[in-house]
Length: 211
Image (cartoon, rainbow, N blue to C red):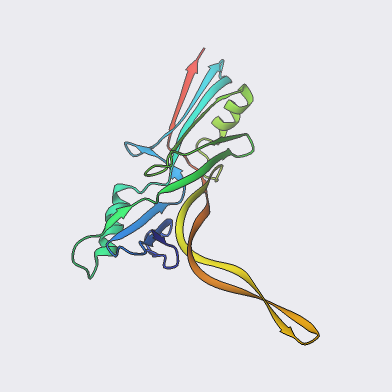
């Protein structure tokens, strides 16, 4: 089970979330802030626009988001966790129990869906585009400004601190007194994490089809 009380930070990879296992000292869980999946080192995002006399008349947008680690990130995490120890640790993703994904393209378009709840928890989304949307996204495509927002709401079970209210009553002759107090204790409970990342300068595929 994930031990959320003792997160591990790597200075080189601040966007990674790493946690030990509560009982197994050789097991760790790691996932990244939301980003676009990569295919041959190119972002898995395709903008297809239909062009007529240089003006967009419509199109299609498709993309895949993920919380996965790249091969280089996995190697770096395992190396950092192995330092000073014998055998390398086992790196895993959490056992996801629920989740939702929202992708916003500036104020032009919003896509929503559910991730796979397996492994890197990726989510494939697509939408047809109106002429106005296709042209607006085309104009943003190579912008250095952050125009793409990826938001994950994910659930899994973890070992964390929970706060509960306790009430006790003291009986005295003629009256009784109630006492209320907050008690913090560690417990296994469902955890919801909100992860948001803003991206720009997307190196995906922009396909123009001339009509």
